[in-house]
Amino acid sequence: MTTKWKDLRGDLLDSPEAKLAYERARRDYELGVQIRQLREAAGINQTELARRMGTSQPAVARLEAGGGTPKLDTLERAAAALGAVLTVQFIPAA
Image (tube, rainbow, N blue to C red):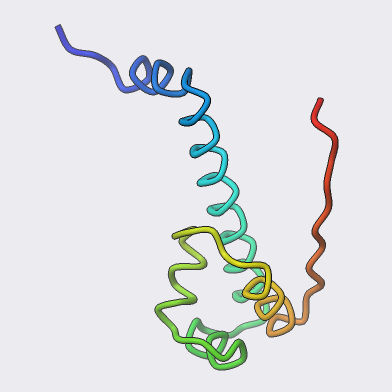
């Protein structure tokens, strides 16, 4: 008998640690998507964004792919390089 991914994923996410890791990965991915969308809207490539941020193109690629949790200063540099405003806020849990 084989196990379907949907069932396995559901079982794995029952763990509080797994849920936390999944939510962090989702957040990192969504930040990356926003940065990529802003970069594309600005009409610049990853190399140009990297230059403006004072980093490397591979670092920008990782950031856009959601590869790791970016530090706040990295997000601030990305926002400045993209002419955007970074907003960080706490929202009470439901």
